[in-house]
Amino acid sequence: MHRSPFARSLLLATGGLAAAGPAAADFLSDGKGTLEPRNFYFNRDFRQDGAPQAKAEEWAQGFLLRLESGYTEGTIGVGVDALGLLGVKLDSGAGRSGSGLLKRDRETGEAQDEYGELGMTAKLRASKSTLKVGTLQPKLPSVLANDSRLLPQTFQGVHLNSRELDGLNLDAGRLRRVNQRDSSNYEEMTLTILGAKNISIRSGTSSDHFDFAGLSYQWSDRLTTAYHYGVLDGFYRQHSLNLVHLWPLAEGHALKTDLRYSDSSHDGSSNVDNRAFGAMFTYSLGAHTLGAGYQAMRGDTGFAYINGTDAALVNFVQIGDFANKDETSWQLRYDYDFAALGLPGLSFMTRYLSGDGIDLGAGRPEGKEWERDTDIGYVVQSGPLKNLGIRWRNATVRSSHFGNDLDENRLILSYSLALW
Image (cartoon, rainbow, N blue to C red):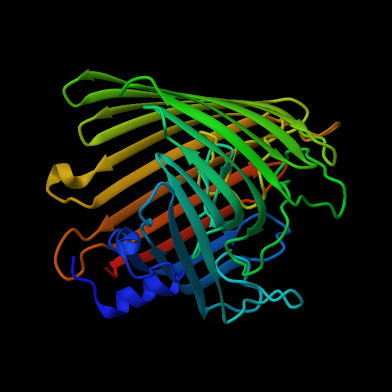
């Protein structure tokens, strides 16, 4: 493959491992680089009485640069990745910040003009096992890095992935610091206490490491099972089980079953005590997809997860997680792929969720909530604008006796450009 001098310079700059000789050939030839400009408009109107602000409304431009080397030759291959992130304010103002798009001044709370970070990751590969040290974006049931705003959440730590046996996938590692999606600082971790989870933590405490381990096994093309364990030191321990089964019913018809169970307990500085069960059933019929979900929280608290991350729950959606103390929730979802009508790249999704039975404490009525989401996206399939994507996300949330009532719109323009 032809490689420009600029492309070679970028790869060399990520670690200087491309010394002359055959050992560096794969390091260069297997590398790749992508640039993703991301334009994001966010508007959230707060509808409840006594809201701290009328709305959060911001517009920003982001740039995500990803450089990935290949591996040097030999029994143990060496490589390095780089992640460059930059967020630029286009519009914000007094009383409208706090959307999660932009970094805020610690004293005034107003959005800063720009922010960013540079992350480096060293990696080693032996056989079918890979060890990464440095900047990480884990996507595991125990810890799901969040990428729902202008720039993604990142972690610093070490992650080992092994696929030595066919069908068996092993993960283990330790995270030491987190950089939230609207921040440029790496900090110690804590757990989310939003909503009515009844989770309490010792004032001023945080954790300097999160340990995780897990395995998944693909029994066949139709069945996969998994077990994952995570412990946020000083806060909680969590065991998670997952089963995914795909049942082809006929030509163009299939039923997917996704079952999840988690058991969480406290680890010193919190009162976490939760059992979470979730089930999602998805029926596909050509371009149409129908889904139905059920989720139940039991124990003295709601579901525990690292602050700022996504939660591996079937009813974790655009705004809510439906993971409050004693909450039972259900979901109905519909998707349509317009490729069936000759419009590839155009997709539509809508869903409705309702939760009740939320324990708000002695003397208070049970809490209830519902959320309605709509998502319409289009990605240009060919021509000069190929890979240009536009997405509109709309959400409405209402609750009784707790939480925020809000209407939200997000408009996202993104483009993926391969540098080599």
